[in-house]
Structures are given as structure tokens and as C-alpha cells.
Length: 206
Image (cartoon, rainbow, N blue to C red; front, side, top):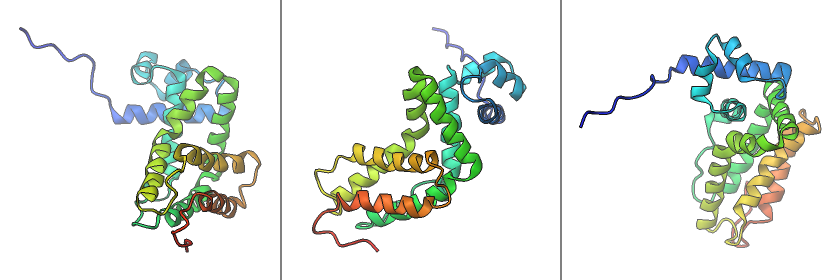
């Protein structure tokens, strides 16, 4: 039986970056409602089929734009792996730094644009949220579960609910325009949330 031919060409990183850059610029300038795959293609200097081969929809493309921006804003590129017994300390420190990074004017504008996009297009809201926060959500869930496994956090902790509250607290700071005080408020919010799920046997974090 003849070997099946591979279809399509390998994806080019340069083309991907050009499309993502163009989508980000258009999103910030014109908003989600006026963004189109055709506009992105023109701005990136590629054909519309090239964009669709990489992203099947506008929501998928914008979600990747948000994910890339979030990764760039994350201190040291990722949430650090804590030592045993230091999950709370790690999360408090990371969220303080993350709040400072995400409230940079360009990053803040992108997050607000995505929020407006989700409100303007309910059918895309879930895709936008999952696409832009999935990796962060998964990492935070794993951190909390590690804290449960070592006895630092209560065994009955609803980790998904806690992570949703943690991520939502950062968004609230942006929506209320409290960017100057974001690091302190983010740290306070995280401490308050995590104190409520700490195991009685665990010592207070530093």
C-alpha cells in the first residue's frame, strides 16, 4: 500500500508571530467586534487561508493572542514550582508580581479588550476564557493540589473554585482601574483566600 502523502506545509514560526502581532494590534485598536480574519491577514501580509489553517475561528486566534500576552507578563515566564510546605508563600509572591506585570498599560488594555469581547459575543466567551487562561488555571490547580497532598491546605478544598476566585481578583483590579495599588491588593486578596483553606496544622506563611 502506497505511503500516504503528508498534507500541507510545516507551520512557520515567523508567520505565526506576524499573525498574532497583527491580531493583537487590531484588537487593541478596533476591538473584538470589528476584528476579522481578513483584516488580520492583510495586516500580517498573508492570505486569509493561511490564517484559517492555523486558527479555525476569530475566538481561537484571540485566545492565543491573550495566552501569549499572559505568558509574557508572567514573572520568569511561568509559575515557579514550590518547595514542600511553601505553596501559599509561592502563590502570594507570584500573584503580587503577576498583578504588577498584568497592569502594564498594553497588557491591561488587552485584558480589558478581551473582557469586552466576551461580553459582546457570548457564544465566544467560553472559548476566549478557556483559551486565554487554560494553562494558568491548570498550573494553579496543580499547585493547590500539591498543597493538599503535603497537608498545607485542607483536604476538602474546592480547587477549581479557589483558582477561579484568584484569577477573577486580578481582573477585578483592572476593571475598577486600581492598577497603582494592584500588587498590594492582589497579595491581600490571595492571602485572604488561601488563609481560608489552610490546614489548621500548617504554620502561617512568611
